[in-house]
Length: 417
View (cartoon, rainbow, N blue to C red):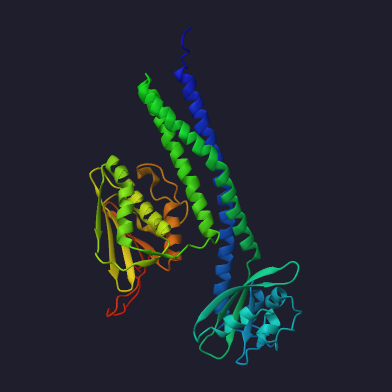
């Protein structure tokens, strides 16, 4: 009985259909996600504009009713509190947001207006010339979520701006749930396809398969791996942006963590013809944080550096202490990043000069790194010059050894990313 041999063209067609179908599903999911993101950006733009108008109006222009003429044109509520912490003027929008008839807010205390002691504590905590922000819910049935922003200028009194962020928070929740659901639905079939592709690639190496077929099987394996990476990073970003708190309970040796992360990527770097070098300061103080997440930051930065480096290039990972901060840097001598791209490089889905990227990418790694570093009370930035390479650095608080002078000045790299 003869052995039936599958026509290579048939296998080609099946593999092509499988990859195209998975790609279309993910593209559709990302299209809806971007629509949601655009809606959020529009709302944020409106909020920023209203803040500017409110700040401008705080310096001039009040009519006989005690409320600024410009205040009545704003989409936000504006309250002014006297030294006795009672409201002495309020615009119409503030009355509407707090559910109080026109003209009934002046004379009320903060507690009488908001029925929330947290708002009273927030306003009391504002120092002269300072600002504080919080959120409160108004109403019993159809509640509204308000952002309360209090500012105490040099002159007597306190200015309070109210913004209805109910719809904004609803859209953020929808976006988070959508990403989470789609990612979970895609993760299982993609993992199965990746496993099958890896098995098929191993079988093809042992069997008498034409070289062109082996190349196509390898391509399916690589592209499926990129899709799996994107789904995993989407889930990570959804959890972080959804408010999942980092577990800042580990005492971390940042030098050791940097070395371990480099070792994880050494084989990948060797395949790309790139040398990895570590340059860590001895006796680094332990930092308090989430070791797994900070390890993810190192891996993302080193992976990107290798991907953008030329054959025979070098990527250096440096860890040092600067005052009360631990600073880590990943330095490459690759294609560099333009000044225009540097301003957006930490945005989700943003990719700089895709045509020159070696290998695929999701555009999510740096956004995740930014969220993780900021969750540790730190900052991440980039310094780069086109054609000469890039240095990605992040700084997080670290204990200051006894006898060391406290640092002065601003964050390193504070000139902007």
